[in-house]
Image (cartoon, rainbow, N blue to C red; front, side, top):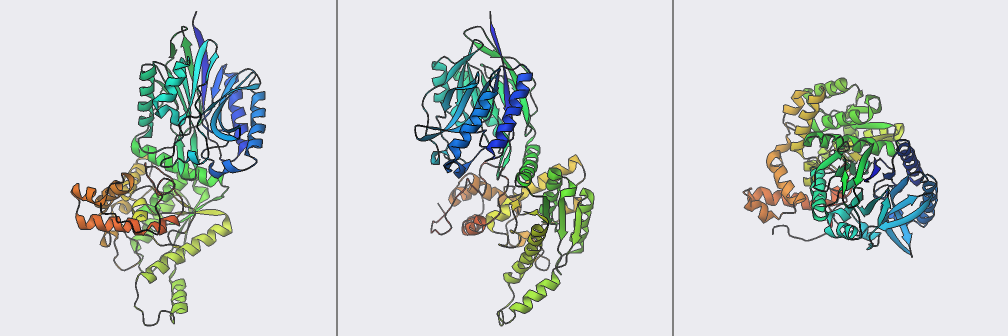
Length: 542
């Protein structure tokens, strides 16, 4: 007679450091799964602390807090088995672990074998590697445990199957980037084929600082066929039914949530990035400078979709170079999205600054200093609103601008979160067009007009930068692919443009180091996965 096991994959949104709150969320999910008749519930990697906990893992009280949480969870494991990710101390060492709780007790622990130490991951700083397999039996089905990176390497899965596993349970905190879900499923399909066992893959959702975790938990049969998949960026309890004839294990087919198209997945990730950063950090709302340009227009739309119009304020801060078109478009954007909107001309403040600096600047011609002063006045106004109202300032710089330093320190870079920090200018246009397919948000004239900072008469971005369709390609090769200047030139790009762009990227590291964080949507964003020295004499040509 065959065995059957009901397993719930808990795709939940945790908060880093909130062990008590995360424990309550886990208990609530356990109670729901029990009511549904599940035999086992799986939680993501490091669900108790949230991911990544970074140097919170070094706090002396961590072991005590985790011990208290485990005790609470054990009390809820009397009628259902629980497999939960957590940091665990053993013999004076810290492990990224999965704890099996059953019958009111901690039954077994699995310690992650493969510790990622690339891009956004820094686990070798904190954890020791495990080496032992964990296989346990539930209702006649033998289950092997792996954690996140373990499934990207053949060895941990093979070791679990060699120890008798008929199915692999994989706990994840796998962050989003474009195309990541397809990579996950292709990798898990390889493990299925190598070992002839199904895999249950549970992932967390929600945002933590610059990272977004997109869920997409799934069950895959031993032949690599996708049997079910949870939604993108939604909290969900996904139930998989396993059956075994004593030798082989299968997973029943269920609902397969649609994987969103590329632009939709990016847009949704940006919305979640803003929502969780604002809400998890306790801000009442957000404020941003609305210039009438496309970057601030898209940022405004994302903010409204994340928080609701009542928690978003937009401020137009015109100067004598601000066009009538910009004033009209900013007002229209605010009206379409229903946000609070105000206009604060900065010319009187600029004149006051200029007067105060007149003696210091005597005999010196006007230059970029005066342009930067405009941006810095706007930064002061926005930060003052932030302080007074408890609103987070959203900056509006895109990845292309951040890359080449087309931004002003303590000016348009002043704020707490840069929504478009990992979004190239070309993708800003594409996302704006995409957003308008959902409902009106961004006036078409804003999308069609040439981009301009409007800090000087008749100024256009491409007066001082290569065309964005060229610039963004060079930046993608140099930043995201780590290609050298000569490699990029060999692809057919103009030598002078490539060398100039590469130099701009390198010399503006000091600016990016002082920039607000922002949601990561590519494989290589400016943040925790790209760390270059500010002071260096590296020559980037080869």
